[in-house]
Image (cartoon, rainbow, N blue to C red; front, side, top):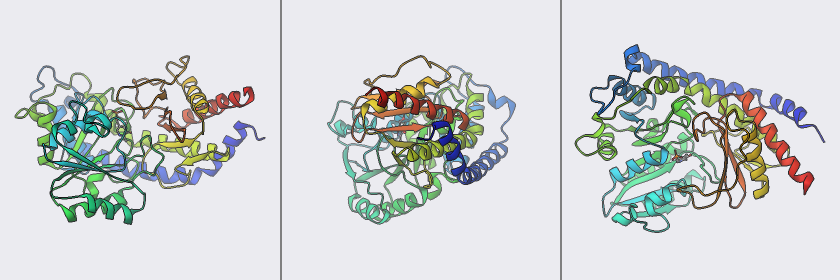
Length: 413
Ligand SMILES: *Cc1c(COP(=O)(O)O)cnc(C)c1O
């Protein structure tokens, strides 16, 4: 059998042309970010934050404006008071929906939304418990069928249609922006008042546009994923139509206060710098994902997406086929991490997740998944999801270690 080092060298030759394409996307996104910085005259004093209520926080207000421009939206809320992607999504859904309204989702939303919406049961505090109904349309990955099924499910009481750009923890394709535009048009043709909310986690800067450019009304995500550039220490964002941003800001803080408050403390520089660097670090993560896809594909594993398939998120699914292999893979990724490398990942329960989950995350920022991380819900088809990596060299070392850990397993068994 070919030695793994040799195989990796050969795989690197296979991916050079794809790397050039990724560089082109990064350049276009970098130009858009830089242009927004210039347009709003980002200045040294914007990098200093406020305390207390955070009234008159020029740095925060300018960052909101820059963010809106970068995300091709009318307005944005970028806040360290949004603790995660799940929180950003919950703020949008609770801010928009009232009793009697309904939510339609294309495909099963990300695991942590189960309890926010009350998908399986109307848990206290969930949207379902407040009288908001929920309908799910299966995601087939066939635009014609998906458009028809989605349009059939939308009615006069449909307040929100929820689309997810990334595959999340599901063995399914991610949603590209061209298809997303078609889906949004199908929804608006039936009910122009329906708000299309896009879970943008892991999708930012992977294509040269963002969902508002294809008609999404609101998008949101986490700053410890793509748009924080590996530098933002915490936070989340919501971007979209101005009236809707005003409305959900009232939910984030309180009606009447909205987005006028929210101290930025000492982190504004990190948020600006993270956004500025995000297109590049996303491109490094994408290169790592392409390399991993080709490497494990050549080792005989089924991967999603295929190494040369168009990408719309940074997640790489690898079907390993058994819980033992998943744990070994994660052990290898953890072992090659800069922080907590000596820690051994185990299957555990996480708040918001139904199945047991194993995660490798030896990151500088807790749980930050634009840094190299691997996670897997312990369920069929026993796939591991690899994402991030602030340099492609680091991903290369990580996947080699993951492979070695899986090898010790097969020789022992
Ligand atoms: C990570 C993720 C979320 C939730 O974000 P958290 O910051 O972990 O709460 C939601 N949707 C998708 C697609 C994600 O990848």
